[in-house]
Amino acid sequence: ILLSGTPTPESYSQMYHQLWVSPYSPFKDYKNFYSFAKEFVDVQERFLGSIRVKDYSFAYKDLIIPLIQPLMITYSQKQANFKNTIEEIVINIKMNAFTKEYIETLLSDRVLEIRDNGRYDVILGDTGVKLQNKIHQLNSGTVKTEDGVGLIIDRTKAAYIYTYFKGVKIAIFYKFKAELEMLQQIYSQDELTTDIDEFRNTKKSIALQFVS
Image (cartoon, rainbow, N blue to C red):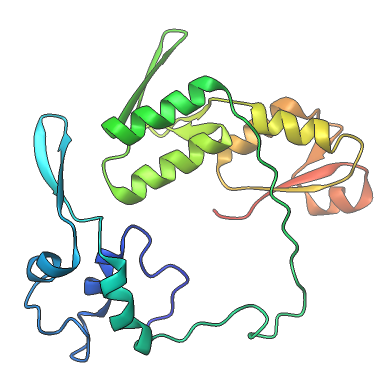
């Protein structure tokens, strides 16, 4: 039994390795991943620096899904008897133009170099998961360099949250540590806390990391 919310975080190509442990895999007749890829993947080539590599990310979902669907059981929150329903309202916020340029550069080159005030930082997206993660970070206005430094790139979203909810006590959930630093640059110490008790007993909003 495989339990997962994201069994294929990078590509449906990964279903071969997710299921190969079982002799009942629908792909059992393919002796290795490369024989599987000949039929189920649009194999492409790209460059990592000057090195040409094969990219197996582009799987044929329309061929794979019918084979794995009979093995899968999926449940919605309602079917799983969740007591509370979550209403999501998505607000689209236009970031600065240079953030878009950073993302486009990372997508095309898989590497991004940032020079600012004498600093020189490198961000790599040399694997599918890493690329996705770095783009996620940049879309929130921060990014972690190869040296492990969290850079604050674009404060647009944090500034929007502060202005839109000004005077309202709210909870802000962030993912990356640099996002907290960014919020603390926008909010004053009298307006934002990371302590639950202080949140309960004062008018301060709270910022909490939902993934660590």
